Length: 56
Image 1 (cartoon, rainbow, N blue to C red):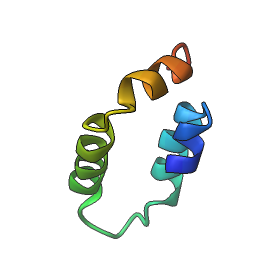
Image 2 (cartoon, one colour; image 1 turned 90 degrees about the horizontal axis):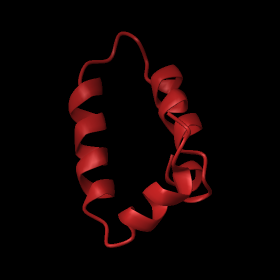
Image 3 (cartoon, one colour; image 1 turned 60 degrees about the vertical axis):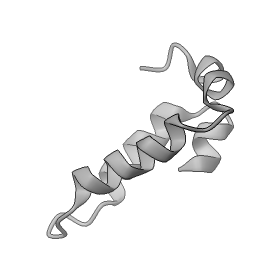
Image 4 (cartoon, helix red, strand yellow; image 1 turned 180 degrees about the vertical axis):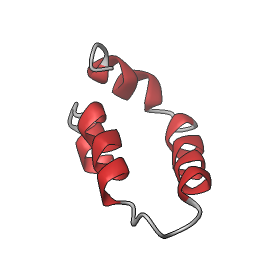
């Protein structure tokens, strides 16, 4: 997912997460939230977010 996000493909990363998570497995939302907390706290997030702007 990071490779997708860091190369300007944020929407594809979130789509991948949705499709790749095994349906019977619990913890999807908490895993996503934890991933986002780490990602959004990165010193590079403002630049990464700007690069991905307009994909939502």
